[in-house]
Length: 252
Ligand code: NAP
Image (cartoon, rainbow, N blue to C red; front, side, top):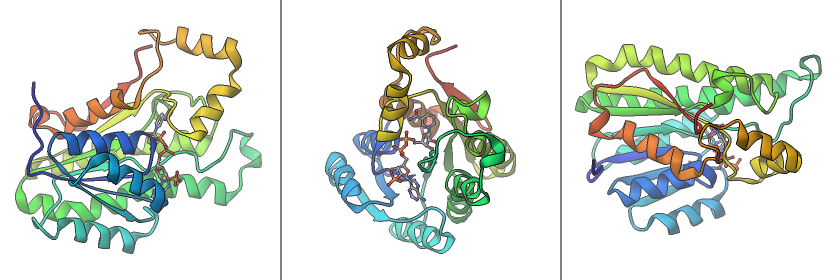
């Protein structure tokens, strides 16, 4: 199975580092023109260097609906549409787990804004062009935290990631008649940024061994494990798959 994304325009959110950076690199390597956004220009420049000529980067906060629309419009300018949207930006916004009664409204909202509302804004902006061309792929990045109890202990994160799974299912049903598929990838724990590195270190040697022993394939995941699943959903090989959530976590 050789995936060829030549001629496709892909928007990948949160591509400054971690999984989004690897997805950007992988999409560009298979011929797609990649547009990625993040909050930090320096990190985005690094992504552009990794991707080569077929990559445009912009500082865009996925919580700002107007900026999201303008970014999607710019990415659509050449071909009149974007073909693939990966709603990857997310995470725990620097938070750590604590009892529910100590959570402020702002802490709760910021996690929903980044993980769920951003996906809504981007999908809304991308869909008209996809409908016009009769082809589209939307891939939402949820988490094991959306399927099960979260390792982070962060209630809003578990809720927003579960919300993305419902959003995927609902959009898939709505958009199928236009040739648009909507799927979701739920990654297991991957060390790929300072936050996950801190989380890993906090487990200590015993906790780390226990975590790896709980994975059927007995190894931690790598960013490319997630990118491969996303590439499959973005490809023509996945044209009769929609509304699905794929756990990419080494098995339980
Ligand atoms: P990451 O390294 O923190 O990447 C997320 C990216 O999104 C970061 O570059 C971050 O930028 C960006 N971002 C955050 N808020 C944003 C905003 N408001 N507007 C634009 N960009 C924003 O995290 P990751 O580990 O690669 O995770 C990628 C996705 O996979 C996330 O949705 C995460 O929840 C999910 N996931 C990750 C794991 C894991 O173990 N790594 C497991 C399950 C699910 P800044 O760093 O500048 O804030």
